[in-house]
Length: 268
Image 1: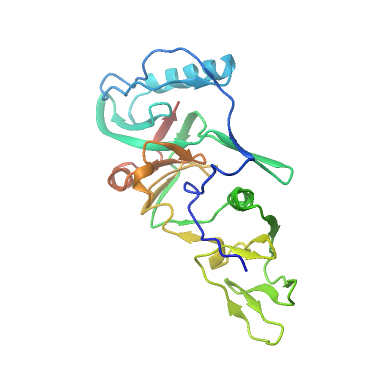
Image 2: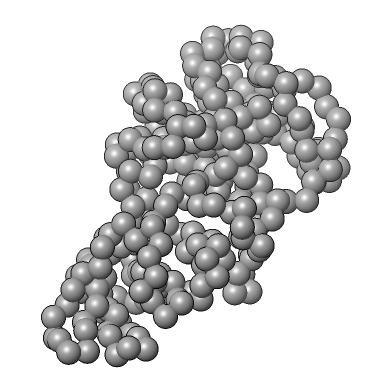
């Protein structure tokens, strides 16, 4: 059994993974990043666009954000900052971690990690959220460590090379040794790796979810995109996520307490 610790969606190392690459881009000109005049001016940020179309789409999304009104959130992706405004008043300015703008290819599939521009709505909020890693998370780990990838279904019995049975029972994944009939649950802080294969645990099992990786609070923007916290505070302000907007503890707690469900979120 190969031991690989389970890690956050935002902290899986990608430097050694040849199939993970930045999205191609070309530097384009532009004025200084800005938000409505009432807000603290955003720091100067380099703007890289994939194409003229990409540049025009950014300008359009930015224009919608700058002309917005009422109680709202604005996220400047290039400046990596989040603003909470109420009409002309700036209530909160927070540094944010945004998407790494990279692609991952594995097994004939491709995932693109970007924070999409546009207008979203806070659909829900919760405390102490549990992260259920999507399939791309396991593909990323497999690429990083040179492993094969295989999904498990609930109750499925998989015979390993040494005769051990890998299976799930209730909400646990475990093994049954060749000389035993006893089901032994696997540890929760490591990926399920046997025979140079990373097994994706069944949905609903403890081994498929990770506690604490989204921090203490989460605001759901729909389609898998979130505003959330993190246990890795040093990466705030960097382009490291797989699409979510990540915030420091104090900032995400403030949003949780002060931003109602239904609030519009403008991203550009």
